[in-house]
Length: 176
Image (cartoon, rainbow, N blue to C red; front, side, top):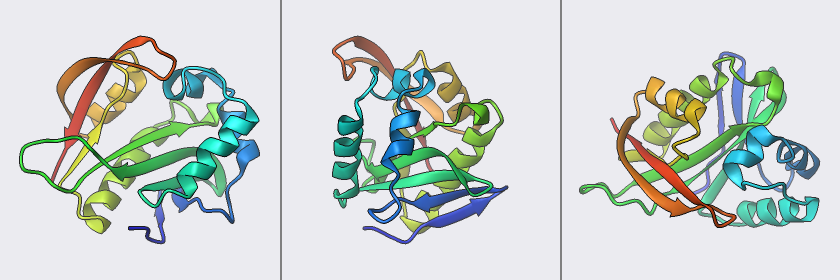
């Protein structure tokens, strides 16, 4: 279910990305930064790969993409979707990924604000029963942020990342 989305908190706003406002040049520039590609694709993507990847996401009604705006400038991205994760008798489980693409906006508490905004939105507007996040265990910055936002670590597992390397993942959950 796609909804019009605009959530605002502390000069930070989440704005729905669609075909009318997608900026592939900006997404490409963010994905060239090690702070982004290390956690998302584990490699630098070409401009064509970025266009194809995000065009496919924009045309997939099961995913929603949002810009993270600070003071009316795009500084990052969120993508959320119904999760395939199974937990107890929960049916309406959501999952999301996010990154701050603007390096000057890192380590300023923006991730914490954004995580809380997304959680509120998914619980209040999408009636989520549970939210699950699955970062790399070595992504200490993300793990600390999620714990600060009341997510509970419930599991760890090994899996293969997007380039074929074995990685340890964490499973964090939060519910209301």
